[in-house]
Structures are given as structure tokens and as C-alpha cells.
Length: 50
Image (tube, rainbow, N blue to C red):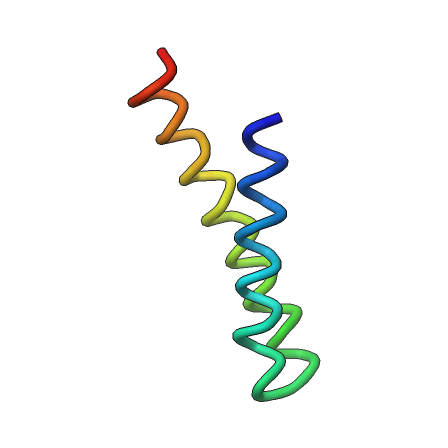
């Protein structure tokens, strides 16, 4: 569940950052943000919850 939250937050940040340039940039940055959010959630879980 933590990964899903990280994906949502990262994807949202990426989308709004890319939307300034255009829809394609928003999509690409959303995918990058999703991956970064999942990675950050995984690292958080390993560091603080395990």
C-alpha cells in the first residue's frame, strides 16, 4: 500500500511539472515520477518500518 501511495504522489508531481511544457512531457515525467515514488516508498519502508 505504501508503494501505491508513493506512485500516486510521484506521478502527480511529475504530471504537474511536465504539464508546463505539454501533454507528452507531462506523461513522460509522470512515469518517471511514478517510478521515483515507488523507489522512495521502498527505501522508506526498508529504513524506517523494518
